[in-house]
Image 1 (cartoon, helix red, strand yellow):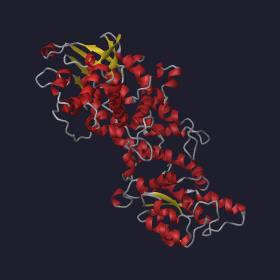
Image 2 (tube, rainbow, N blue to C red; image 1 turned 60 degrees about the horizontal axis):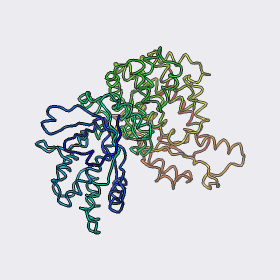
Image 3 (cartoon, rainbow, N blue to C red; image 1 turned 90 degrees about the vertical axis):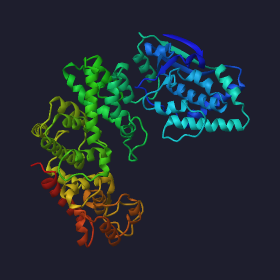
Image 4 (cartoon, one colour; image 1 turned 120 degrees about the vertical axis):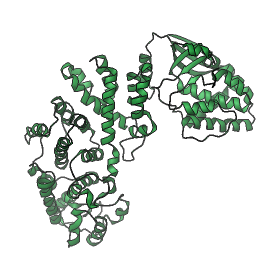
Length: 586
């Protein structure tokens, strides 16, 4: 390894290729970065010191005979610094065009081959736009949905404005060439760029687990495998929109920690690690399941347990396809089937954000080829999950259940799953809640709107055939509204307070139960807010309006009043439906 300070001309030369490896992320700098860069470049005009543009890490690569015929004397892999090198190249291209020095630019930034290819060889995602800009003759505005093009347009506008303000662009070009320097860290072919890359990441470069994984799994010689498999699954634009999505209500926000790709990899390592259960130390059992250790765990599969990298990549891709095809958040916008299956399970997971269940669900999808058997497993799993939601069982040991316990025992049949759960008596954390506990819970447990909506939506879709053209929307198209309003801090004149405190406490308890909720076909609660505290007649009118085609709302047609007894009766009716018809234990 060698480090030295060099100028732009020492880094970017016609006879040196700088290859950005395919595993690097695409160009991601934005307007704030471009603004700071342009101001810094202009500041060189008024400084008698060199301007330090940071460190870049390059690794020597072999030069081919074809390279030499094109005048290439050196090849280097860009381990770190691609964002700065790309930005500098675009800025310098605009600057050269504006002062009519395209030939000077070509003699430094373009190769001497027949097509005058850029000396910076970008990854496949950014190469077309970058190459197009490098070959421009005049600084016209470009149209494209690309950060590369956006950077070009920004610098074009910026430099036009500075020229109009009297800045001498020729002086600026000369000063940049003379004053801007890098620290170039050159690795030899024997140096471990993987270790360098990981160290950079540990010092704060924001790489996702997906970025780290493709760098770990695919080396330069594996580019064809990367392009044919990993890239279409994880790295094309459409795939990124899915994997970068956030689990928040406003999905598709930008949060690395809760991104879909992080949840997928966490689920993957929690199911894969049990392939090595007999070789796991106690420390590994505890550390491998932590979300922050996803990447190091996958490295351990290879380094400590001898798994072939390409086999690991193959399995990741298999599970990623299952995840993407079956556990997409789009299920919230899609009417789920009446019959048991993965779509109903996906609706539960994505509504509750209960991702602890994911490893076992993925395991079943991967291991159980028979669809009928899979659906029986998922039917029992739905019953288990919903009954626990209703009874509000503590989820202690859930993490182990849906990872170690069921997967280690290779639980891939309905009979095996049922036997495992039924082996837990009613006093145990992981027990299936009994009918008696369901009846008790429905009259005592309070639910917020989200959980009330989920329970009622699952109940209704079980009662209604998909082909009946009823209940046509996904769960996101519905809202659960309480008939008797939740108590306010001030007295509600439409729902008189009980004089007996015990009666009032009973009301407060029952108001939050499922029996007081009605599922409404409305996409937002905003239109309901002004009706929330209305009296019986007004509330009945609005509930009837929005509960059309919803079976459990049909009782509204014959209601004459709504009180605690009505709520209790409806809870008992639900209990019978839940226990005997919808989520039966028989």
